[in-house]
Amino acid sequence: MVTIQRQLKTEQETILLGQELGLFARAGLTICLFGDLGSGKSTFARAFIRALSPQGQLLDVPSPTFSLLQPYEDLRLCVYHFDLYRTHDIDEVYELGLYDDIDTRVTLIEWPERICDDLPENRLEIHLLIDGNERTATLQSYGDAQSILQRMDIISKFLQKHDWQNASRGFLQGDASARRYERLAKSTDKRAILMDMPTQSDGPKLASGKTYSDTAHIAEGIFPVAAINQELRAANLSAPDEIASQLDDGLMLIEDFGDEVFGSILASGRDIFEPMSAATKLLAHMTSQKWPDKVSIKNQIHHISNYDKKAYQIEVDLLLNWLWPLLKNSPVDNDIQEQFQKAWQSVFRLFDNDFSVWVLRDFHSPNLIWLPERKGHRRVGLIDTQDCVLGHPAYDLVSMLQDARVDLPDGSEERLLQQYFQDRLNLDKNFDQKAFEAAYAGLGAQRATKVLGIFARLFVRDHKPAYLKHLPRVSKYLQQNLQHPALKELADWFDQYLPESERIYHGANP
Image 1 (cartoon, one colour):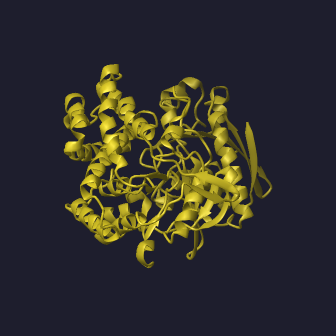
Image 2 (image 1 turned 60 degrees about the horizontal axis):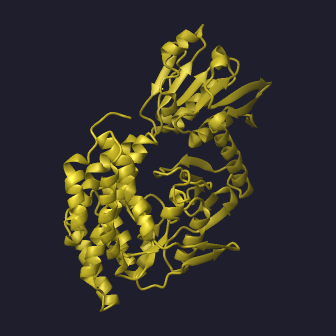
Image 3 (image 1 turned 90 degrees about the horizontal axis):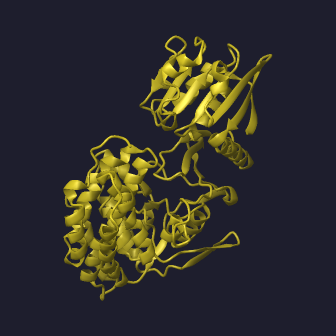
């Protein structure tokens, strides 16, 4: 059990506690609110629920005193708000569905005293005590919820240490990983991004003796972010400045680049060509630089791995491990898997035909930010850089031009490819366009195959069905890349075992 205490001198401090906890909420969390009438339970509950809503303070949060249950299914996380004051036995609680699908939502319970012997294991208890004109909140966590309370306490002390404790804090749309981001503001011109990225491994050791993260060269902590960003800034590129850090605890305060994310520009219907053209020129420019295989920062060394065949292979195997069983309702046969892996070997050889550059691997619309007030290549803000490897320069280009999450305007890919080819020729008259085109198709197929597996995994393992809507787009790109003659053996495998018409999931939640 982890315990912390907060003094709530005003109603506003109760609201702030609810908002703060909303930043850490995740599916499977149960919050139990203990306290007498007038202790602030409803105030806390409203603040917490509104913190999960894009409507914020405008969201109507009625008390469930009479209905006993008020569900909120359109928030960032689904929340079921229970008030058990009028319940008399555990059978009524079962009838309300308190324990049904409890791992897929946040459960908020007022008057949990009614079921003290039957409280969920993974829970956070908040005991609100009135003492004169002041309230004290004692937070106690059990099971998996202990990590939430520990993290809240560490971050609170970090912000206080660096004089950001009074900043407003808001959830910033994250990514598919377990990382968390917050937007902090002291004033309109004093803002920062909080990166919360504790070290963690992505799963158990495999037959090779390494984890998936080790083999695929995936960062398991925040130190690579600091190292890669430092080197990008030294190369006069726009990676966020570091404001403060506590790397051992997985925390950084970094520069806020604002909201002109490439994906947001596309979603708003504005012209994206100039930003994407600038990003394409940046990638061509990066091929003219000498990129190191290690970076020294804060008396430590970060090594940049080579994007090797073992990494390529374990990534494409995600399709067989996650999408195949989702679509086929059975694991893949050994002989089909062997044919799949054999077909990829000739594709991987295409990636040996060019020199290595830094490959950021997530060079796409969620991680590129338009900074038009800056000059040259610095107009493109780069975030999510920690998985950088040394690899083929076509990888980041195909990541952007075949974006897994958004549709680019018709003709954009070909137009920007031609621009890239011309920029490369201007930098190197020996640039081999045909070899690059083959590598581009191969890396596009490799990335699309990997992403299909990742999106299936996010659905099955992490209960994130929203990624399924992207499967048709990614499958279309895979099919496009498979048309290149150098990928014929791989194309034949897909035609026989997993054609485009069968790569879409139409079932229910697993």
